[in-house]
Image (cartoon, rainbow, N blue to C red; front, side, top):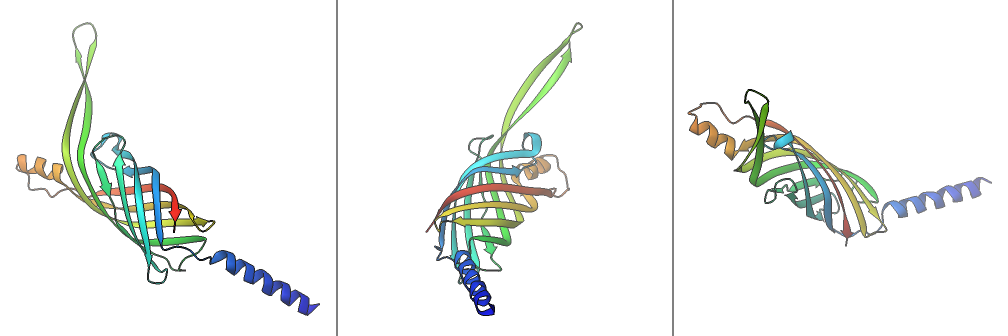
Length: 200
């Protein structure tokens, strides 16, 4: 009886290990149908973007180099490039967690709108004004990633980045025009994205 139980345990553990460590490719190409990014200069302080992403796994599965590019849906022409170094503590497998530094580069035109009201004696007249300005932004995040590989080639991923934006060219230009000696304000930054694609 003990021999049968030991054999069953050995068989079960072997099957689980085989499922958890398939031969996975070192290249991951994905599309990102949804990325939500906090961005203080934008209306409502948030942006929604779509993009593409390439990740290369190196160092025997311990490190991934990720190169995501996203385009804003709210401000066409505004883009995000956020390269990351992902550290996989348990190497590669079907379901894995990764963490690492992520750099934040963004640029393009941001459109702003405001509404002003004027009392004409009988009622308020509302007028909406729009203008746009160019922004170049830099920042840094810590990226947390959940990676799921299905059937060796189908990849699903979720990323959550938390950090700061420490430079915005438009804010700096505005301060120079106003002869202000204040430094460019540092703002918190959060990014959440969902990606799906092909692993080979």
